[in-house]
Length: 159
Image 1 (cartoon, rainbow, N blue to C red):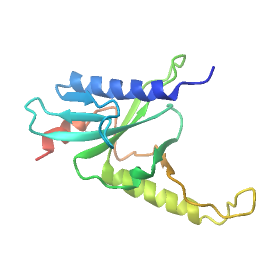
Image 2: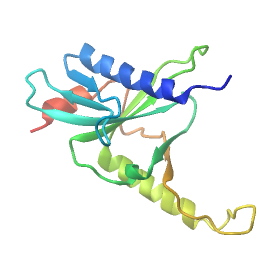
Image 3: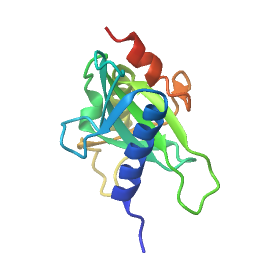
């Protein structure tokens, strides 16, 4: 039986929301009812908010598949959490990268532009690559926070 990607994605959203709540923030999973937002997060006073988009990958993989919207900068109160959720039978640890929307947009746009322009790779039918709505984002955000949930700091610094 194949892997249920919807279950993995849902588990990542609930795991991230749970970690935020554990750190005294209010986090609500939108269940697909809010465009571009998987989790709405605020401070306990409800005066500062951030929108969180969660994307899941298997720890050890070097990429996360994202959609075209990843190229758009949604503002300083929008962040991505790249959630490395291990398979149930794995002994790998959970991994999380908290990445500002601006950094994701820049990374995804540039890597897709390079992918389209790379002349050394021609499709099997001899034609050049065409654009699509899918993008691949590299999980190499070493400058971002891994496993520390800096969202707490991000939420505290919002004005």
